Length: 425
Image 1 (cartoon, rainbow, N blue to C red):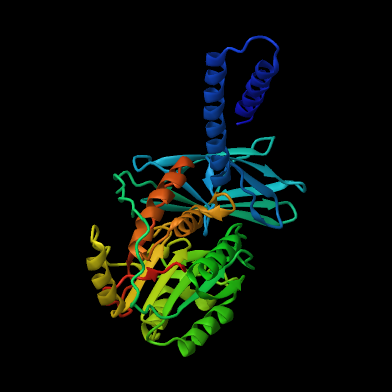
Image 2 (image 1 turned 180 degrees about the vertical axis):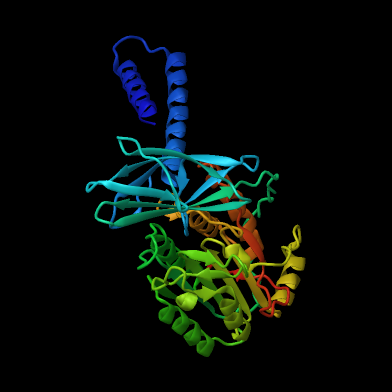
């Protein structure tokens, strides 16, 4: 990227010299240079995005030696950092470096000793086991102080990805006699964890979503930043007391997520979550149970965390396209009378990226972009397909596969209606 930036600056300076020269301008030469510079600027922007999405160096946690992973590129996720590999690969080479000021005593990878050269560099091959292989590197110095670095090696999905048609969100006349009720939103953004690695974008995601929903769509919002389990569950209880059967509720969660390998239960992790102890975790079953008893007519969960796809379980409920205005109004009235319990997640039952969308995650960036550009009453499925297309494209630029999911929320009383977003006039 530095080489491209240097070349761009040199050629840009040459163009400036041509334009300010007293000699006659060669218009074709100038136009060709402008086009070349535009392409170079695009290439540089994509490289910057890749650097943002993939961290080639990771620092370990702990009071012992520093552990740096140099190769391959690692994607920072809302869980354990991940390395993706092709489904045909059987092993992955890891290259790293140890900085042990007090002298290195031992370096272990999954409880097996690995060699370190005189410069602190190590190389080792890790056998891949199925779709996901957990790796733990532990470095111990001569004071018996240790640091560890945890990684997940994930198999990529070689299947062709579905591309969804655009929602074609043109201006549509607002039906005058449909009462959608009040809109509420609980928005949670967790960056700073006591026992887990800090995240960079959830708070920015949550603040931007809160502002957009409140100012553009008229939601009454509650924003929780770095929330512990008590704060989150208290907010659920408050909503249960406040909501009526004419109201609408959106729950947005951005933060760490985990999954129980045996039960395949997904969890949201409050900032007071402990590693290996689910006492303070919030399970997908708990979320579903709360939503199932809430009186609100339409409820939607938007989850941007690892393994959030475990919240879904049914096929996508496709909504009708191509209706004229009169049919659409009749359809809106019919759906508005039914309950909605739907979920939009940033990925499947896999880790998802923490960055890649500027100041936001790739998912939050796409979600915000779709809602900002919308000018009509739009359903959750239309939002899903536009967001899904954008997320897959953005994530793939960094060599990462991420596919958002949308479905009715399991066992929560869904009656076939979508969740509606109604922009204020």
